[in-house]
Image (cartoon, rainbow, N blue to C red; front, top):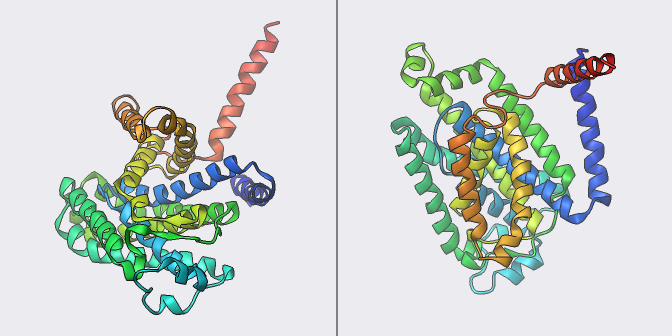
Length: 347
């Protein structure tokens, strides 16, 4: 086995042990921040595939997260809680007649991702075939707002603006980090394949890519569906982390957060999306005092200013379009060792 693969296996084993230990003994605030970081990272990985790697400016991931959150909740919410929540309008069948046990949580997450993919098919077929650039961004933004309005008004299915409370707290570090590892592996394999090279060609010049025989619509469409699936899974994890959801929880500002994350990490870098997700979750919680001590909603102003500064002075982000590799650490350690040896030799 190659040394880099051995290091990767050891890292994953260490990550699994850390998740197991963290769920049992970690400080609850830090535990929550790490879970939020993993959830944001999952959505950002999918967003990087369509926005950073493929170069398609989509503004609809909040709609996919909304669908994933509600569908996952409808599958795993206990029957007695469903009867308690849907007071004015009864919950429609078949969701009113069954509830998955905790062992079915993975199935519910996957189902939430699949529903998001089906929505991506509905909006992606006309939008990706006919639109690009700013027009695509407007179309996907409109889709997200349509989903919001539907969820806010279909009271027999979503309980409307009152939302859903009493959701079981199934999300933990094992599930969140595990989902992040699986979807990151899929995204990395996709990026490094011939399919990923075609996506990068589309990002640079769609007409040139099409003249080389690449089916531009097919590649953009599949990347869009992968992004939607990641967002749906992230929404399901979010719902079962906080225990209550309303349509307002997944407004456009969620897409704004993801845009900031992938810009911070570096457009086109999956590693940057993961690191950016955890940095964002940490800063987001650290700035919570601004909403309570200054003006409610002031955090959004701070994040808007940070995004402007990033675009002006740090456009390439932390990773640019590069990915993390163990060779980076090896080269860094070698430089530190040579520097330390030279200092010791000078005495």
